[in-house]
Image (cartoon, rainbow, N blue to C red):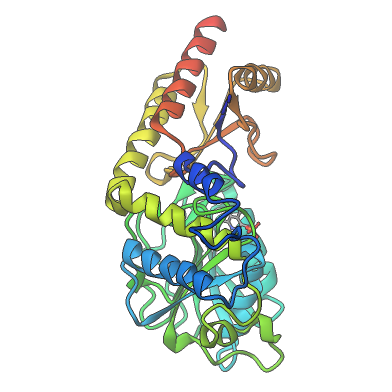
Length: 360
Ligand SMILES: *Cc1c(COP(=O)(O)O)cnc(C)c1O
C-alpha cells in the first residue's frame, strides 16, 4: 500500500487509524451484521453512534447545554443562507467582515434576506491579512456579526475574535474547527463543513445557542429552519449517517491525541516548520502577514509560474500531492489539517530545501 501525503484543502486527509477502523467495520458493524452505510437511522445501534458523536464533540469543544449541536447537510455554503433566514426576522440587518471568497459568498447570500453592512475588509491587499476590528463599532441593532475564522484560500486566521456585545457572533469555522482551543461561549453560531478537519464531504456541523433557534423568517423552508433539526435531534430526515459515524471516530481519535489543547500544540509545531523555512528561504515566499497566518492552510509562491509548476509536478512525483494553490493566490498551498502527520510536513520542508538548492 502506498499512501501519499495529501495537502488538499478539502476534501482532505483523514486520520489513518480512523480509515482502518472504518475498513475493519465495513461489512459488520459490531455484530450488527450490517455496514453503518446500510442501517436504519432510526435503529438503536445508529442512535448510539449519533449520540456518542454529539457527546464527544461537546466534550472536545466544551459545549454547554446552552447550545444545540446539529448534524446537517448542504455544506457550509447552505449556512450562508440558513444564518440570515433564521436570525433576520425582526432585525433585518447584519454586519459582516469580508476576508475572502467565502465571506464574499456569505455576504451575497445574506443580501437576499436583509441589509448587509461590510464592517471591514482586507480586499485592498488581496486578503493577505485580517483587518483590525478594535476600532469597528458594530451595529447594536444588527441581527448578527459574521466572520470567517480561518480563510482557507488566502491562509489567514483570526488570533482574537471581535467583541460584539449583545449581538451574536457567527463564525464560519469550516477549515479550523477543532484545530485550536476555542471558547464556544463567545459565539451565537459556529458552523463548519466537515470535509476539511472532521469527516468526508456531506456533513455540516452547526453549534447554535438555544435562544437563537425558533425565530426564522416566515418563508424559511422547513429543511433550512434550525428549529426543525434542533427539535428532531438532527433526525428530522435521513442524516448523512456514514459521515457522522466517521466524524465520531475522528472525535475519538482527537480524544486519544490528548484533546484540542494537545492538537493545537502539534498544529503550531507543524505550521512553524513551514513558516520558519519560508521566512528564511531565498526562493520560496509566504503570502500572509505574520500575525494572521493560518495554522491550517499555508500558501506560498516561487518566483514565476514556470517554477511553481515545476515544483508542483516534482512534489507530486515524490508523493506530496494536491499542493497547487488556489487560482486567486497562485503558487502553492499546503493544507496541514489535524490529520496531516508531522512527518508529512517534515517531508515537504525537506523537499522544498532540496528544490531550493537545485534552483540556486
Ligand atoms: C470549504 C469552505 C466553505 C464551503 O464549504 P462547502 O461545504 O463546500 O459548502 C465555506 N467556508 C470555508 C471557510 C471553507 O473552507
